[in-house]
Structures are given as structure tokens and as C-alpha cells.
Image (cartoon, rainbow, N blue to C red; front, side, top):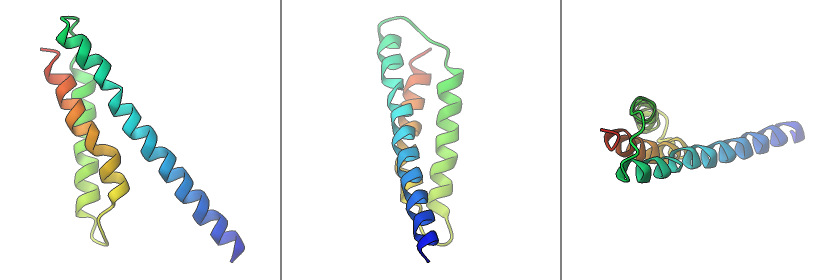
Length: 91
């Protein structure tokens, strides 16, 4: 029983850390967006692929047949928005 609680706690901690890192990864696109608006256009492929990836994860979290997976939704929603903005502003 004690071993299971330790595994559950580890699972929750790793999940929370991964969610925070995911959000930070997508928030880092803000610097590229600013550079794009300043005329230093970047390559749109990586942020657009990231936006597609984040979109698929949001869909996955939303359609989970057991219950909505809010950590996945929240961690990837910024990627949809900021990835698209970063990619589009490269043009």
C-alpha cells in the first residue's frame, strides 16, 4: 500500500513538472513572435508543426472517453495559439 502511494505521488509530481515545462516551451515562442514583428523573420516550419502537435494533444485530452484530461489540455492549449502565431508571423 505504501509503495503504491509513493508511485502515485511520483506520477503526479512528474505530470505537474511536465505540464509546466510544456507551457514554458510554448511561451518561449513569444520571443520569436516579437522578432518576427521586428522584421527578423524565422522559419515557420517548427512552430507550425508544434501547433499541429499541440492541437492533436488538445483533441486527445478533450475526447478521452473516461474523462477530460485537463492537464494535457492546459499544457498544450498555449502551443496551439502561440505556435500558430509564431508560424504565421514568419511570413
